[in-house]
Image 1 (cartoon, rainbow, N blue to C red):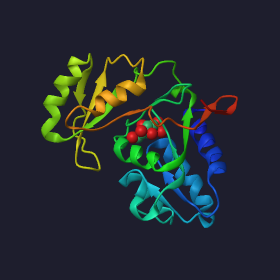
Image 2: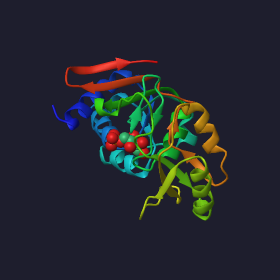
Image 3: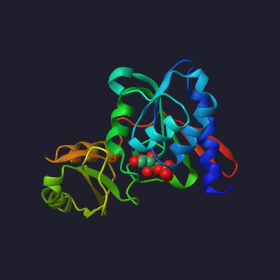
Image 4: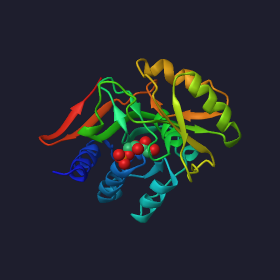
Length: 219
Ligand code: 5RP
């Protein structure tokens, strides 16, 4: 089984968590894309989806699935998304695809967060993957200086603009021993829109693709 097979398997398993006749929250990235393809197979059973990015909205619409705004949809029963890293406590780093802000918003509005990952994403401590931080363009340098003061090494994601018209700083070298605390600390830097730590609102269920099958984990 290659990595795509593992992603496809967890995407298929996530369909079990989608209630009939609901509006489902949909993440962004290659694993979320497999989930969208699975969702297409049961599209007659759902009312539609709220997408966490323009890219996911386009893929959903391509399958004939109605895409609603979160404002119109209200709270959602379930959100399905991948992660760049996840711990056994269900804390995550997200934003490798740059969609972290909308992902955090849709996750916050969802009753259940189902994280779908291949086994390479499960880690003991977060931080090997550079932490993405979405910043308002005029604050790029001042935010970067404050990240350096916190012990990080920020790098601008070259040639990339988020769906919200902002920039991404990818930060290496942060010791993430307390993800809940660091998430709050980073959110308090003026000019930070969102940071890629998803710890205050962790995943509820992790569907982990392994060579021996899909493992279901909870905190
Ligand atoms: C996008 C994300 C993705 O969930 C994360 O990057 C994982 O992507 P993939 O499923 O392609 O490995 O946070 O902003």
